[in-house]
Image (cartoon, rainbow, N blue to C red; front, side, top):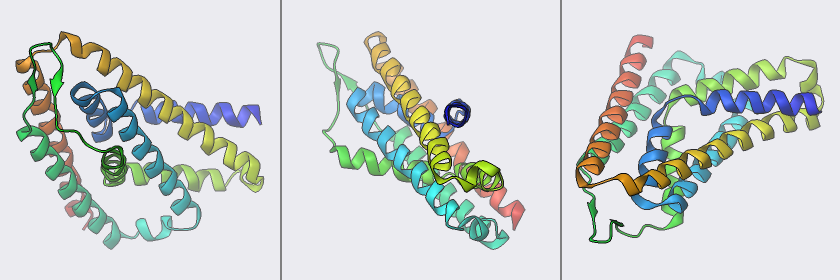
Length: 208
């Protein structure tokens, strides 16, 4: 069982190292709106990963892998990321006199939903979990539900823990920020999300 948990943790570290849309949103949210907001975003990402594992396990992988469905998922996911990118690029942040960042108060549930849909809109995340679940189901360990659960629980908890670490580091460095830096961060994140969206749509068209 310990060996299974270690393998799951290693898988989680691999996923946590990917610089995708969720990573940049975690950093930006933590800088702009604080550690708690970043944490709620990470919770949303956690639930989206868990949902994708569950859907893959019950057989949705066959549906997602169909060429026509890959095209639809790619287009919808790309449009969502482009929309996030445009909003982020245009969003304005200001530092108050005491150096705190002024933002509109947003409920925790909003950040959880944002993290959930931002992560689930990325087809590469679907492909990652579908591939891992498919490969895992082909091993002897998959016949033991306890080992199967331990493997993916370790992976999810590892990803969540590293996401919290990213949020904490981003939150701590905000004391070195000023209005120009905040504007630059927004522009960089917005452009990256926009590029990710275009890339997903381009790939979807190539598949079609």
